[in-house]
Image (cartoon, rainbow, N blue to C red; front, side, top):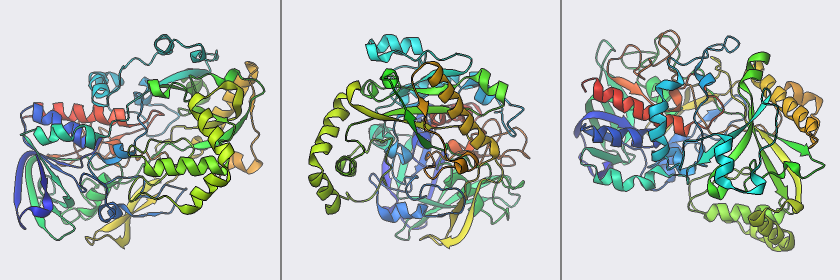
Length: 536
């Protein structure tokens, strides 16, 4: 059932078998699975059913490192969490992502991919992905289209990586009915966790202290507590909870907030003299059928050159798609769209009121001819009218202890310290992006397809101006069997605390190149099984 925390009595004490903080992909998947296992769940969501700025502004923070998306844009604070702006990209991590790689410091998960496989299968159903078969052959058979042929890369160098798509599933909408009907789940909306209280020894959580923006304060007690509030907020809650542990809960070794990772995105023009690269498999031709391919660096090449994972999208630009009129129409459509589906060339704040600016509408009117042509070509995607291609690199980021989130001096509406993000990368991160592009360039030339536009000299050493974060917050409470190297153990339990668990992107030791949502759901299901079997 759903309960508006603003309507409960001040000083109320709530009780459950498991208290879950955050109702995004991880929290909702975990809560529903625990309820199916006959456990009572108290699910605490900071926002409501729809976005509102008062709640969203609690995420406001400061970035002091590499260019990073605004923290109150790339995190969503209402039912469904970040799935409300999810593009739907799905692919499991690679087996190699779980392995310790000698050339990648701090790499390796405390288990191999086999541990997650049964949960991955279930995660596909929860994310509403039609198949868990990612082989190129299966995708080509499924599409049965002459433009679905993969490029004939040297398999020891590059590979075609198939991605499948969720519709995308907005968890707050799709599972709202299930949460409302689940007798063992009480979902409190507008319920902000303000602190995690531990006993005097700091080894056992005793309760959560929570409140609403209207001033109501209440507490939650449970046998076990799970933070599923996102890759940044999980760390923030631990750091804020410092009444017993001065450095924050789980932070005995100064690891909470460190190893912050994302997927750096950069775009580079492709010079293509032929139309052979117009294969629909790598573009958006089959997006409606929920299949797309990326170009990926083969594991053999990664090992040989001691590189990180690398993948890249190829975007075809048709006539008119670089015109002001088309950009204005696209901006307006996204501003009015309920689903706010992702767009590879534009990121809009996915919250707040619909913003349709008169200036943008005038742009569309003045440039109507090209804008209209671009709209038609966007739907039909004929090869003949492709004017250019863009290679969008999306490499893995290596774990880096200097890349971190910390508490800032500025405070939110509750008087709690906000977050400061210092997103940093290592030389191997930029080297992987450069070598990945060089290898793609060499293969395109070998196949007689084209080449990449040359880089400016300074772009070889530094990240280009078009560097973007991928909105994937990972690694801040990383998983490791050794408490001196990670915040949580292999079962996602915070080291040194008997009954506090974390789930989500924050516990990833490494990020791979796959989008994290599918893996986040699989980890949530694995944690549910652990809690049910551990005598909760």
